[in-house]
Amino acid sequence: MKRLCAFLVCLCLVLSCGLVCAGEHLVIGVTPYPHKDIMTIAKTILEKKGYTVTIKEFTDYVQPNIALAHTLLFANYFQHKPYLDNMNAEKNLHLVSLGGVHIEPLGVYSKKIKQMAELSKGNTVSVPNDPTNEARALRLLEAQGIIKVKAGDLVTVADIVDNPFQLKFFELEAAQLPRALDDVTMAVINTNFAGEAGLIPSRDALAMESKDSPYANIVVVREEDKDSQAAKDLLAALQSEEVKHFIEQGLVHKGIVPAF
Image (tube, rainbow, N blue to C red; front, side, top):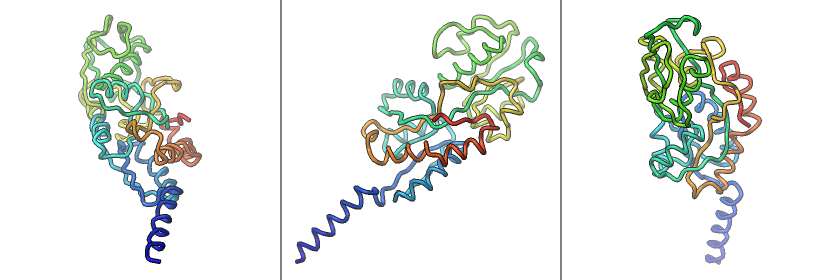
C-alpha cells in the first residue's frame, strides 16, 4: 500500500508538471522601458498557467545575454536579431530568437535645434556604440541627407565617406545617449531609452526610422530551451492579444508598434 501511494504521488506530480509546468520558475531579463512594461502583461498570463515569473532589469545591452548564456536567466527580451547575431558571433553564446514582439524605431533628438535644416558646420552628434545600433543610426542620418556612409552592414563613424557639415561624432553606450543631449547638438537614441527620459518620438524626434524597420525586438533563449513548453508559453504570452492591445493603446503614440 505504501509503495502504491508513493507511486500515485509521483504520478500526480509528473502529470501536473506535464500539463501546466506547475511551479516552474522563469527568470526573464529585460531593459526597463518598454520591455518591463510589456513583460509585466505577459507575466500575468504566464502565472495563470502555473508559472512563477521573476522580471530582472538590466540597464545595458551586454549583460542580459551573458546572464542568459550562463543560465542565470531562462530568457531575455530587449534586443533585435542583428544585435543577437553579432553577440553570438563575438562571444559564441548559442542563443536563439523565439520571435518578435515590438519595434522601436531609432530617433534623432536635440535640445539645441528644432529641425535638421538648422544644422551648421562643426556640430556634434552622439550615436550608440554597439555595432548594430551604430549602423542603424548612421543609416538614419544618411537617409536625412546629413552624411554618406560606405556600403556594408556593421558600419561605424570610420566608414563615413561624405560629411559636408563636418559633424563631430561621439560613440556612447545607448543608455547614456539621453543624458548626452545637454552636451551635443543632437543624438540618435533608441526609443526605449528616449521614453525613459521623457521623450515622445512622435512629438520630439527630428527624424525617425521607417516603421517597416527590420529591427523587431525579440524574446531570446538558449538553443537547448527553444523547443521547451516554457519557451512556447512565453512566446505565446508576449504575442498575445493582451500584449498587442497594451502596445496599440499605450505605446503606439510613443513610436512603439507591435511586431506580430
